[in-house]
Image (tube, rainbow, N blue to C red):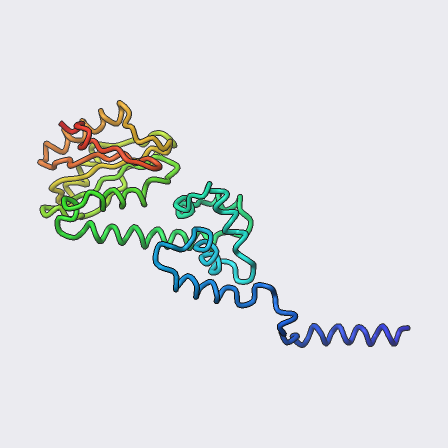
Length: 252
């Protein structure tokens, strides 16, 4: 019996030491699936790839071996089918979904930065702001619509309405950001502002301005007027929509 047991042990060691050549019979069921999915996506017309397929392929770069289709399905279930929310995942979000982690968060951050920079470059072209407010709205949406705390920003514009810089003025709790008017005036002077666009988000999702929003806007306008800098608009960013002070006659 001992001899037979020793032979069996040697056989096991040999099986572990020498990789078994994969055949059609023992290849995993998803063998070649990733290459087929990449090929299929590249051949699909732009904008026609399903949300789940997009996430499945994106997850390839964070999960070297596992089947990512169930993870993609779970992510969409978590976001209620809203793929935009995935771009703004934070640490607490990935903890609720098995199969995603820090690598996925880093990949999403890189994607956000690429999108944000593309909008910023559009804004820095001459007269881009006046020619298309949609560019400004899209830029603010990608940067602010899914933030969980309130941020107050100021886009500083030059003489040709080109974007000089995007300043984060204040970052607050879930429903309030302290805005320091003296700091706003200093930033405008330091960057040779001709005009500015103010923007802040409402984490609640409702972009309707509060009375406090209206009052602080008037105070900022008055302060910037003393240095001949015009406020072109104050935009409140909600989860799915925006509110423009200019369009609603609140800058008069």
